[in-house]
Image 1 (cartoon, one colour):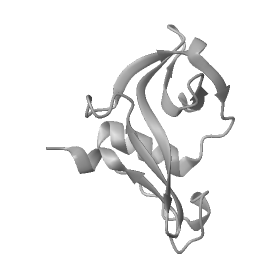
Image 2 (cartoon, rainbow, N blue to C red):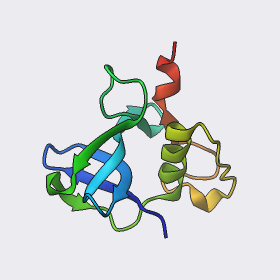
Image 3 (tube, rainbow, N blue to C red):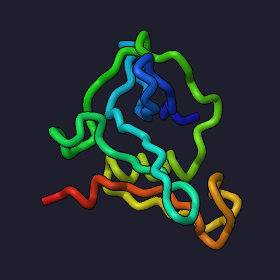
Image 4 (cartoon, rainbow, N blue to C red):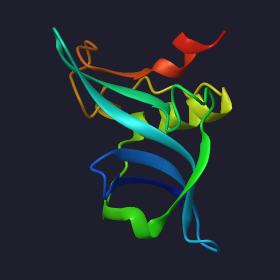
Length: 117
């Protein structure tokens, strides 16, 4: 079972991180943003400390969480893992895209790579 959590904070922001049960914190926190596009929506995954931090890191206490999504969409979890570790995870199955059809209308976007020097 994965220890990746997808939550909404008291600030209204949606974030994803690795849960540390011992400290009751989310670590390696990434901000998940919904970005409107001409073909629907895209999901952007950026470091929570962006633009001052270029890597996914940091900690947030679980006492700042008001909602935990029960199911983490596999596409978003894969992109989160890829963004924090630079390991590419392939998901070629059409049903693995919870935001669109197999034609790729809506996409999960990792904006962190656009801002690397």
